Length: 459
Image (cartoon, rainbow, N blue to C red; front, side, top):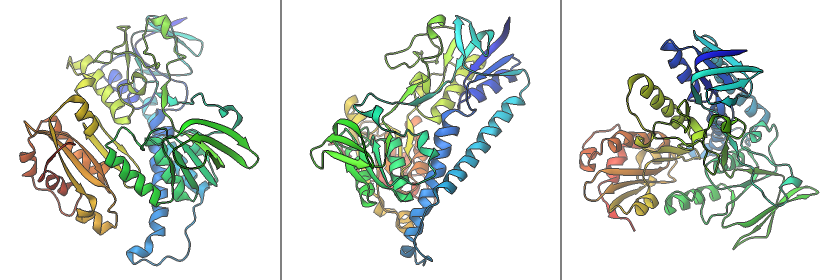
């Protein structure tokens, strides 16, 4: 028996639910397919739970610094990991259930639970049923990469998913990978009370960022007692009587790092390997990401790919923007393209890094003649008042047009203040005009015009 719909949305991450609602709102009969939990990575094991736990870690660290603010605490600070997890689980459950309730209440929508696999160009099988449709939308997300590594099969390891199931604080956590996910967990668990070591193959943490930004992050993490093993080669694992050890070849430090737990934070892979894509003529690239055109349509003209599985953005906000692009193109013939969006993201360490547009390495690779303004966070009144002066503010400007190319803001509130640069970059606003606009005092954003007062060539 085959059931026919106008559209099928596979995966209830950040793009899927909004798209399903909009399709149904236009009178289409819609099937939703979800094999696991509603909400995808962001709600279940990404943004929502990690930022909830980051908040707990921030409170613990602030309590330890209470005397700096003239506040006398009653005693030493300790963290109840089970309570941290319970708080996180409660917030995740509320978000997930709210999303599922929304989908269940939509008119013209049928929900299927199970793994969907294509059985033809315009049909899938799920939960023993055959479903056909004119249009299919894939929002299937990704999962942590578990790389081939000598000895890995001999030890118990954690990923960003299983890391958040811990109810006890690791004695010594070794984080493999010094990039965005790894650093958030490293600082978080150091503040919870773990001894933490970060192992990174590159010469710097977050190697895609400006060298001075990476070095600043290294300094404030090291100041919190996080050990950094940079330039690590030939990484291997070994089970030990009292835990495990990581073998590494570094310019400095011992050849083995002993720990109680190890977290793999070395990237992600798309959930595209079990969809039966070959039956539908859907192409993937060498990493498994779905190949799409600028409107996010795959090689099968009946199928679109949104979110992490298309490789065009690894963030909740880019996934949601994928929905907006696809829906506007379908119903408004808008001609929107994912290539029109300007990159923006944050690293949620404390202090956070806010990034928008191009940074120094990208500008240099593009061969753009550019200038940069740079101010340390110690010059920002709000940062001094809060006692949080780590970091720097950097804004890049094209020399000829003086349009703002991008920014790297590292410091308190940078994940919010960076967004005040989005519209000027889209509008190609000359920096002189940007500087004329009045901002609230005392805030981090008010210093952005000041950053542009003295511009120097990129070196």
